[in-house]
Amino acid sequence: MSVTIQIPTPLRRFTGEQGEVEVDGATVGEALSDLTQRYPTLRRHLYTEEGALRSFVNVFLNDEDVRHLQAQGTPLAAGDTLLIIPSIAGGVGGHRWRNCPS
Image (cartoon, rainbow, N blue to C red; front, side, top):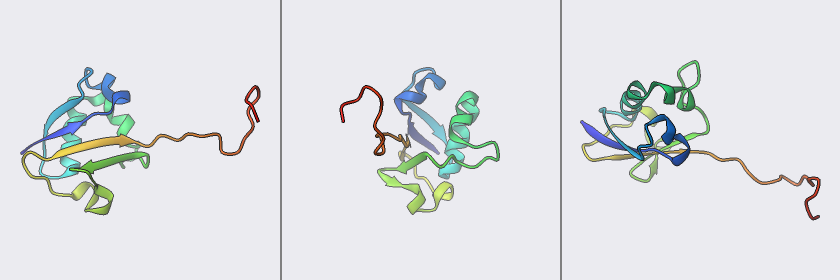
């Protein structure tokens, strides 16, 4: 079954600058597998060497975090949309950086 995966801007260079990719899969894991088979250079940005989804990669199914569903085993329906959102760390964490106002 066909679903759409929305690709975040930082990862689009690995999908030929496509913001959305149609993939096949009955589960979230199968859809992500199809995506990384089509775009092999994307795999290392989503998965660890052991094959686990990286901890900073968040996947949403129709606006719901799949970690709160059945993770990669979450079933998909035709027309569903997956959104990949890499976590972004930021802030200064209380450090005073040189040349920054205190």
